[in-house]
Length: 191
Image: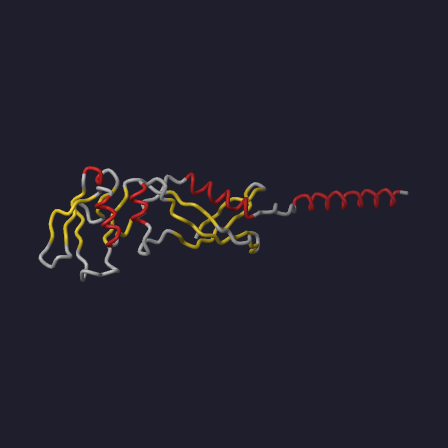
């Protein structure tokens, strides 16, 4: 009889131990594309924003004149170089990357399609996540690749138009890595 009680007690302890062990090995919750996008966007929204330098090409220079951001103050003898001074309206929205209040236009020729100058908007831009791929599991983490876009909505419409040229990289492919913290997925890194 004593052995039967010992065996039952031992069996009960084994079952309790196994139950406790299984309870401690919880599987990670699922992570959907929508949840991943929400977490990535929440991280971007929490960030104060970033400076997005705008490369201005020839059509952009013309748009800047029409928007009254800069005015031609000096034309050089070759006919295609010029100095453009920021107007009071222009000083409210941009500054030349080189400093000062004058944009120096110095292309290699009158029809140089690759020449740009850089202006720095005074308003910060936010980032947006779009087009997430399927969530992948790598060991105890999850990853997702997606497109990160510069959100230009904080800029005035004419400046947004100037930024829409091939010299400006408005989208970048990124990968976010997620880990489980306190039973929930969180963004670990964005590369």
